[in-house]
Length: 607
Image 1 (tube, rainbow, N blue to C red):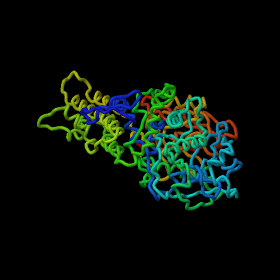
Image 2: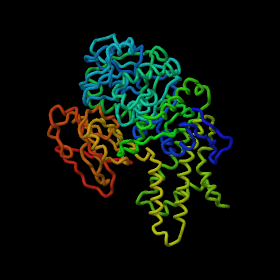
Image 3: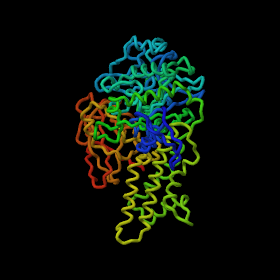
Image 4: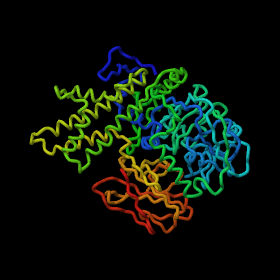
């Protein structure tokens, strides 16, 4: 990623990186500062990566020796070729089932109409879902290796593997980069790494995608690709190098995802444990070698105006801009300099900023928070940066903005870009708080409602920062699981898309309760929160939506049930249709359009 670095430095200690032709620059980093900040904060975190699901960044990553991984398949034989590894047991359990008629290998994701599972570790067909495989048998044999044959006893197996050495040449693609959608989750993989055009890529060709990635990885020196869907996974290009087979446990035919309420519920519960990080020291991300589309002067506008908050690479893919990013990424792995140098954990820096300001900013804009309380909160935040012997607001803002950056000394080009972006975000926070304090301390009568104006400034700051912490559920009860209101609909469903466009990006997640007696997961917000239920999203298969979605899953639903006035159309809908009522936090709207027969227990949204 060659950059021109000047000799002088700006006030935030970042060097003057002069933009070369379609290359990265400090100016681009500042212009996209909130997005870069959030990419760092959400990296390797299920929660933030689900909400900011169109990832635009790449990081070298490392997995230590002795790390456990899991793989679900139809055979007890160890894998030798390319396959998927899950970080979580429950994730791999989904794919621990018989092949049920697939060609050799039997791990290709389906391509039947409406039946698109979130291909994952093992790539097996989710239970109870009928689909056709698009993987060619001879293709499957070639890349799957020994596991294409082996035990054909009609059972599923859960494999356990352990890294026999550190996996030091992994490429982490951020966001929901394993999400098979046309919403932009695959843009960075398909348009940058694979160098494809929008017309030549298909979301559900994940076997082909994985084979392409490993072929590129062989040229670049990359041994695997770290991605996220409903759980983190690694596409490991060769199981013969770097992992050792520990065991293969045959699964009980009566248990597993989709076969009982507990299996399905526990899968999503397990993902919830990783919302704030993968934990266990299982992955080290090299932030000092980050390469991001946000560093470059490219058009990231979403062609769908109704989803403008989601960056896309569709427009940039028509130019040479993405080839420059790809070239920089290639050079990074070819040189292997990233593996030899000390790195800065920029996520630690970002976490310090978020934890200091997130709850306090939200508290200050509450209706019940008085002007005096707002002033008290701001004083607490700013006093450390203020010398009352001689107050200099400009100097105090600079000191405030640089506070959490003081421990770090940028060394790499990515370090300087991240320093500039984080400083920009911090400066915006600090200058806004000083502005609000000055406003509230002004006793001139013509100012009007100072508290209202101050809160408006803070609300504007919150909207610009767009932190995922403000959408967290809080702690759910032991019989509940947290559900994110960001969803990934099948893009080719007009009914679903129409409903999706009605949803505000500021929705608040809530907890979903497990009800084993009826097989129904009930998720309804407490209407005392002045929540409006906006209606039905249309139908799709349960595997068309990630388990972190807004949808209420009606498994084995009775035909007499109606949601928002809609009833299942046939007995075939018992498993394959999903209805959901969306939540729009609008204080003006308080009416509910929810109507149904039978008992329905509301759950209170937290946070």
